[in-house]
Length: 362
Image 1 (cartoon, rainbow, N blue to C red):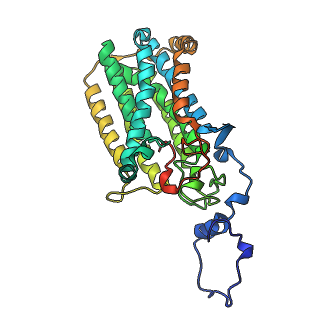
Image 2: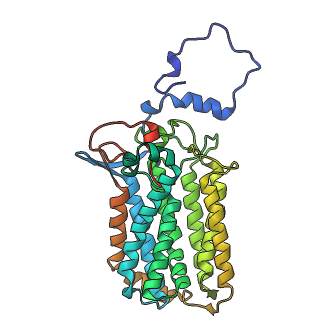
Image 3: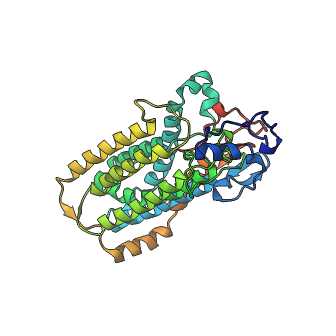
């Protein structure tokens, strides 16, 4: 059924369908809802794509929530570094400028690599449009952490641990950003937790063509998993640990979670040996986490993250620094500002074809 055609307007078949023909429950529900996306009330957080339109500029909620998540991760990461006695004031400016910028660049490059055919066809248009992938951002941030640790001559494994203790909570807020934008959505489902995207600005509607179809809220699954991981890592840090163990545990647990969540994802993507590029990335990051845990196993135990009183004091002090605000600004400018239409930087009103619109982080 094509979008925009009401079921009641279709002509009746001259003969009834055979009684033995039955449609799967999910397919029937999808057919009933696919044509009415434009007529439904855009209720729910998942249909709140646009925050404001100011002349030829569109501010999307994704950018605001992603920036809040980045600022939250920076705040906790900075506090953990102060708690560990790393004296972050010596290198914090470099760290919290390099990380968001390299994350943005890395996520864009990773997205372009996934869409290499489109890039070869229209390189200029491909580069200058919204479109990012979380995995590239993680790689970019890792490069930033390694570079800053080398420049400032600080313990790399300890710095990775401090940042890993804040990242899952920021990532959880970032997945709420995906929820509002309609990217990273799930497969059709008959589950009671299913959501329906109806806003034409949502990526699930304008790109995936799944408007009105009940889908798995995979972004919320990922957000819940990230909050759980944040709690688990905080519990691990509350006792004796070896430098690198927290970061290694983060990579292992998050990689396993993403690998299995991908089976519920519904965005069209290429596959190799029945696995998506994101699942292959998860396998690679899992291996990195296992190697990191093996390296950390030879180090001495420490309790630099264990004292609750020092953590609370560090959180209070870090909240009044400029660094979380700096990270917020850099991420918001990168992700939150679109052109007149969502999904493009063009200031002209022009709805691009689905192959030109690939949305934001995966």
